[in-house]
Length: 193
Image (cartoon, rainbow, N blue to C red; front, side, top):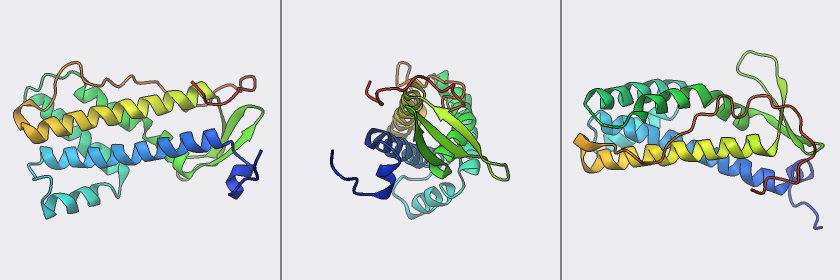
């Protein structure tokens, strides 16, 4: 075993730190593609200065971004786009935004094979949540499905605004509270699938 290079590696296993980094970057990309999709739905050219500035502004407030995204997805659905997942996608992101915030702003620790996360929504007292490997991997998988779906919709809308979605594309599978409090399980062997 080698000495940890960084202080946080003394407190958390490397596979968890990797998974957390992947989750956080996936969430960052969800925000980026959500903002791009809003801009496309507003009729902005992807590479225009106006679209770039609007994308940056939308990403500064994730709560407002999600509301704009939901409205854009509802608008695309009203235009007759044939993807029944459009409305559910925005609602899934809205419902799970709190878990992104907890992952980014919470203090993570390891205890007997579980990950302990001390965090709370704004103006609330922090709580300790116990997360096991299946909950963590489930959150990663869900975020990845959402990112893939947003990219498909945005890229299709970019090519042909009249046909922005198609059936059979990446499908989000909402997990009610994938990062919600989980009972502490027996020590796991890590995050390997």
